[in-house]
Amino acid sequence: MQEKDEFYYRLRAKIKNNINKIYENDKLPEYLLFAPDIFYLLIELIRDSEVAKSKKVKLGVVISYFIVPFDILPEALIGLIGYIDDVALSAYMLNDLFNNIDPELIKRHWAGDKNLLKVIQKILNDTDKFINKNIITRLKNIIKK
Image (tube, rainbow, N blue to C red; front, side, top):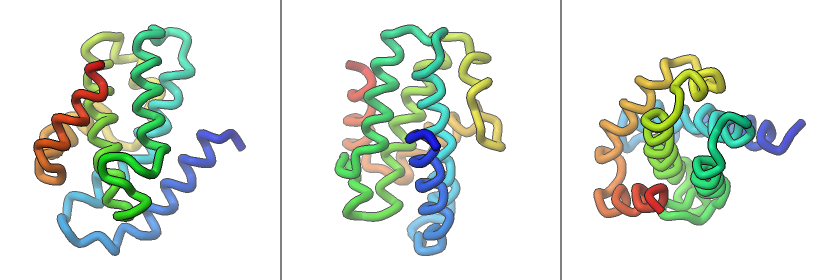
């Protein structure tokens, strides 16, 4: 099994097995369940030869952010809720990609069962319900560089 697959399945199992422990917001578990599918999408996009190298650099940054357990909201310390900033950062990155490359290129790598554009829009619209505005600004700055 490839490393990306191992991380995907571990993350999916971790979230599914612990989702009922999250009570802060009814929508939060739904957003956290997007994490494995989004991670898988990022990996597939970075491997795709049609994606520009400049975009792959940013994808690499977002993938690294996902994997590192100590980031702005560290899942190593706060548990599953710590993945919400990873999901938000990924949504900002994917939104940027949708605006700059062929959307079909992105969609063909999506393994989720929901409409990818709607998922990204939903995350972008609701991020401020889960994350402090200062953190949102920091996340956006990560992909602007």
